[in-house]
Image 1 (cartoon, rainbow, N blue to C red):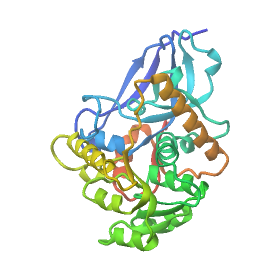
Image 2 (image 1 turned 120 degrees about the horizontal axis):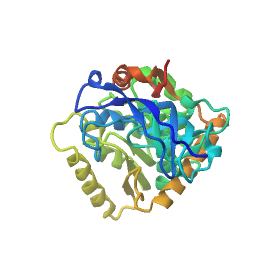
Image 3 (image 1 turned 90 degrees about the vertical axis):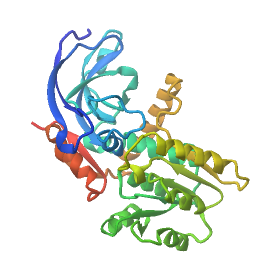
Image 4 (image 1 turned 60 degrees about the vertical axis):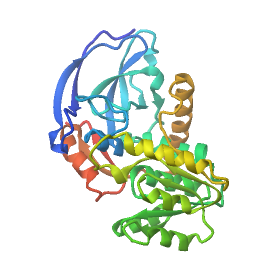
Length: 347
């Protein structure tokens, strides 16, 4: 039997390009799910770099203001629409939403749900939804680094970075990870060799650790340093760029840094040196939606299994109630934490 009941939802709204304190809390009636949809009660959602860029109006293809941010969510199905198996009700799932996840309840297509293993903590699962898919696909689908290889992970203490380090170590790959000195012990615990990202000769330090070059560099920073990341590669190596953090505070067109990056990558790939460069786009292949969903489901299922099996350790920086999203966003942007800041329902 499908649901015709409306649900009262609390949502965090990004009204314009504002400071974290400018986030707004609103409540509204969520309509009953339509054909193919479910109502998902949020058990955990998170704060990633995407939302940090969105609140500045700097994310590459964000919607116009105002909107509810929230790139991914873990939750429990409370109602099903026509054509959806009612047995989903009461079960926990993860989903990638791009926006809308910062809400107590949300409508979502049942086809976008990925089952969360029984007994897995919602906040733990949330740490590896977008972060886990991103790390898995960059390592195994793009760079295809084999056991015995060596890689560099910039920002090894971050949400994607820490997951990437763990996946690489599980695959028998040596990792050099950049982070501030206060996070070096943490990076070592993950299994990587830490390098101070503030060291003026950071790339020289990496070269000392891998004098013959590396098989892959995972770079979320972009900007001028991307050229030096490229130079770290040995022949046959792969540069995977997945962000432009270096230009996050620059004024002007938010698309320009990405377009410049695309042009540089295209030029590098034309060189006859055996190296390759890629810009990782989470939404690549979305035009073939069924294939996109199948690949996302497959990769996230692999990561969740590793998490449930203890191979991955969830990197939770803090758990903060949804209604206090402003302080949670400020904490995530402070660069003082390791792992992911998680929003939970609260009281």
